[in-house]
Image (cartoon, rainbow, N blue to C red; front, side, top):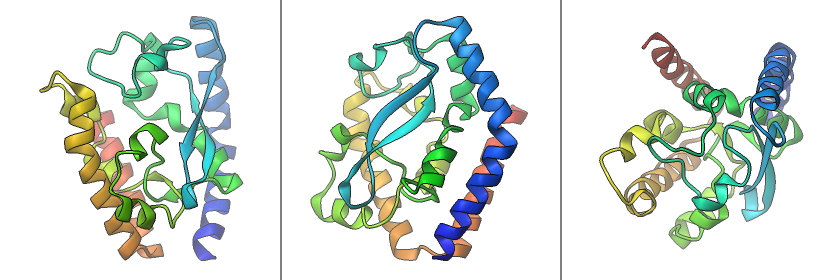
Length: 200
């Protein structure tokens, strides 16, 4: 109950603060490439139910059909999209997802159904007993996932074999240890990680 109340209050405040910025980015995307400015995709949520996640579009229209992953030097990403992705600004519309109850501020990052099919069944059932989140342990560990993938050629195979197991274990760790204090710690660590990117 406390977690949901926290999500409602903080997402409402965040939307009031960031709505002008969201609208600015939406306009910039609209003026620089064809297609809708908001990207909507189905992701797996609590109890394995699909929900629509909202992002500011960073790729050219229909580019996602080529791969479910973003890889190093990805030509599908627009110029403004590179900037938005670097600072995670494309995820600002997810404050709406949190306010609506599809997501929480902290929880396992919502995954594409395609990759959820590769989850360990026992872990999958455990992970999806909670709402997916805007940030979690894996968001901090893999803040710039493409840097990790640069050393490899078969990005999808590496993601499934190397990154996905780590993300599952991180999610299990969160589900087992979840608390209001832990959520605050993860949010602070995420902000610190973000500020380090800004300073580089």
